[in-house]
Length: 352
Ligand code: SAH
Image 1: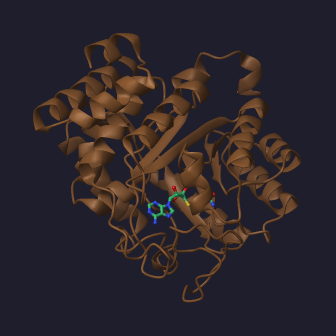
Image 2 (image 1 turned 60 degrees about the vertical axis):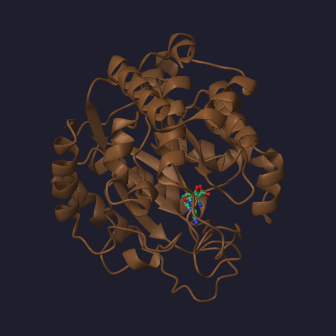
């Protein structure tokens, strides 16, 4: 662990060795080292992002996901562009300076519609960052949305194990996922990758692959959370990933990619009442409160028992702010760009 702290990397065998031997005491040490690394790079600030889950319509069929196309029991919804703009207005007034637009892979939202929406948001609020999380699209779409003003893109790699990826994504390929992440990076987005912990059949070797892939990709953001079963998916009877294993992977991600922004995800808050606070203490430095209209929140159910489906966005912001400050951190309402990106050539930063 000390060598990892100094070198910011380990090889696959060393990661597996560490994961095989983690116990309560060494785990505490791992989390403390990750916290120190985070403080060294980012201090004790936590960035807030307003999350807008704008459509749960999806053409893909991921085995774990509650909004997969084969699930006929979901009540499907799609917010119209003016409704999304209204969420942004509310969020802006609450102080948010990043909006994360997330959805299933919904082709009603064509490149033109998305480009117009992003340009509208940026025209109204030039001082904010727009993050997209809408799945796999082609180069042309990614480029046009970037030119329209999108700043960041979250596309988790989901798992770096080819075997697991193929078993879990009947409608997608391992190669294309990686290719899309590289395309986003080349275009100039701040890119977010990430993975689930505790997927059925996932081994320590697989998790080592996830860390080494992150190290190689060097993303601006890393989303990590436990796999949580959803009752209307083929994985409904599989055990959930654990709080401990997820915290360990967050800590390791911080130690491997110290420059990255790492959210304390909703899945962490779902697996344990203090999961997000514990994630912040193990290296995470972003929280993404929900800004979606209350009426649609219960419908964006990727897994069972998802939290924060009933709070107003104002309540959400102040509840989280109290929790974050209570855990010893400080909320920063700025755009919160990644250190990687801030230190990269201006060409990548557009006209900022
Ligand atoms: N369509 C977008 C957004 C996907 S939803 C995309 O493809 O990127 C956001 C994330 O939720 C996914 O990347 C996945 O890692 C996570 N997720 C989905 N189902 C889950 C489950 N059952 N348990 C835990 N996380 C899940």
